Image 1 (cartoon, rainbow, N blue to C red):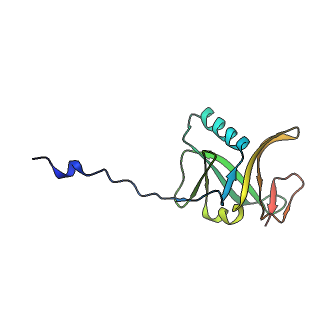
Image 2 (image 1 turned 60 degrees about the vertical axis):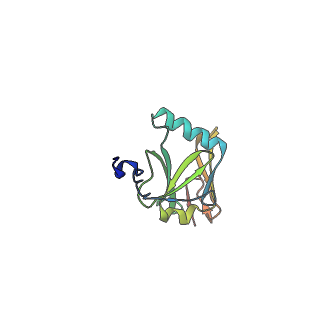
Image 3 (image 1 turned 45 degrees about the vertical axis):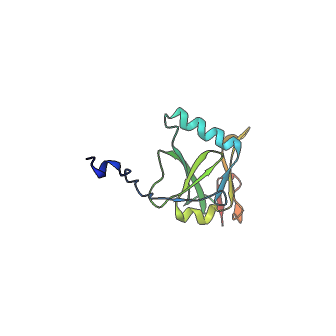
Length: 130
């Protein structure tokens, strides 16, 4: 007689993060391509891009962007253009409705956040106020 426990599906671990959509943040194709390239170069193709808003800069707030292996507890995960973006709940208040782009310009290359909530930005474009 077969053991009934062997027929039960394995329990799925509970998600410790929430799922958001592109109303939180969306990614341009240039940004998606750059994120995928960076994650592949670091040997973690299933990684995520973290966007956080922290105090600092000449306008009071600035973005902190880095790559991580997976979402942390309480994060909001958004998938845009097959790119996984994670944002902590506090930062979502500042970036909701934004677009993440990657610009390769004469003055430097980097990720740029086009934020509809930014009431002002500094001259260098690295910080904002909301």
